Image 1 (cartoon, rainbow over the protein chains, first blue to last red):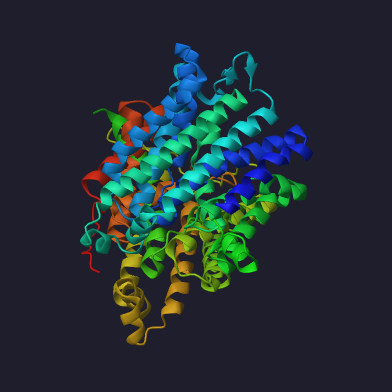
Image 2: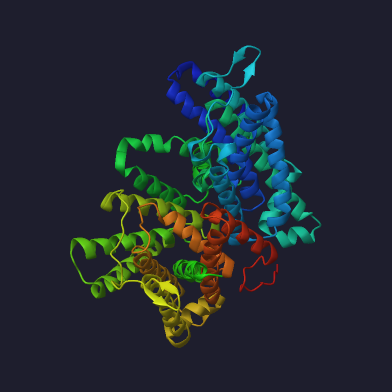
Length: 308
Length: 292
């Protein structure tokens, strides 16, 4: 808890000396990724499942909220939670169907869902604007003050991200965290001990999908423009990579992964054409030598991570 | 059912044959290590681009290019295993799988660095014109792909059932620990499996490049189709890889024929997810008993 408090102080004081809107934009995006990876780390790191379909939920949150606001004129403050809730509901239904699958088969089923949603975004052009995207999404407003600047959105997004981190830490510290870990260690043993394994897996899946959709909604109203390219399977692979690079099995790991990998392509663009090559090499290197992730490495260094 | 329908079927089957070869590459690695090798699609693109250098820049004949490219992609697979995966400090499947994701991004970077961003197409395998057969116009390309892929499956069947190395690979697939106790050098079998997967990728790349142009990042989509085929047939099951590949190719062709080519991807993957709901272990996959 102390670590989270310090982290919030750091996050909220950051705009005091970072004033470049481009940097603030990247940092706000880090916040969005943090929300998604924290939700996902419960599903991967605790419940021991895998999803390469979270790009679909991000898309449903973004397009859902944007369309509710554009088509029916619903206030974005209502359309965002509504879209997130509907996505969580959908994930809950889907979860009962696909979470019986194991290992690579689950990977394929979630990938399949992501691909179906992605291709539908492209093909349902009258609704989604197809490949050229959906412009003119209204921003979030408080009275007459609209959150359009990078600084304002930075605060909004990080408030949400810190709330999710707090929730994630609370959830995993208690009984639920231990029970999910039991499922991860051995599903069969957990079931034999009387845990409703399927219900737990589905609930965590729906929770992480809802959080992801919420982040998607924030993304849509922040940028005002969305297109399918953002929501392809690369996104899904990227967020899982963040969880692993950061260190699965802890909320902090997820946050570290998001904070490290989001700006990495921008940093590497300094190397121009060697960018992809280096990015791949760095991923391989970290996972080969530090399978517990960067947070495992930081934990060895000092007091970080323990105090959460 | 007119002639166009059968032509859709034939082109679907020939695409499916390529998916089957990729699926087999996934299966070989799965059996040795239990991981999904996401770099499989990039092996294929690498092979195709290497072949283009041999054929177009250095004017080598086909008979020389084929073995050299297959050998090179096999070496690539071997290097991925020996230099990267074998050195990983964790044996956790998820970590190993995402190391191959990193390898895939790395390989794409290398391909872009060497050959640039321009898409490439290889010259056709056969120069003959399409011929007529009872009202059907048959493209010898499609037929050739189908035959080469089936031939590769047949040779591998012989390899797995009648050679010492093939039998060793099957033994490792059943149980690596018992295989090691029987004196099988498991780590070498694993390395050989990656080499075989690389070789299959190279072969598939040279087959696909003459019919559909590839660019440096095509490996993702094609690899995904191969992965889908492998899952559909039953992951790690060789006959399943063939069946899954052909089914997926046909499924795409038929959705394009009956609905529209715009929705062929949506339908193909939707049907795939539905099949998994009915048969969670693929068409030919075995249901494994669970134990503590």
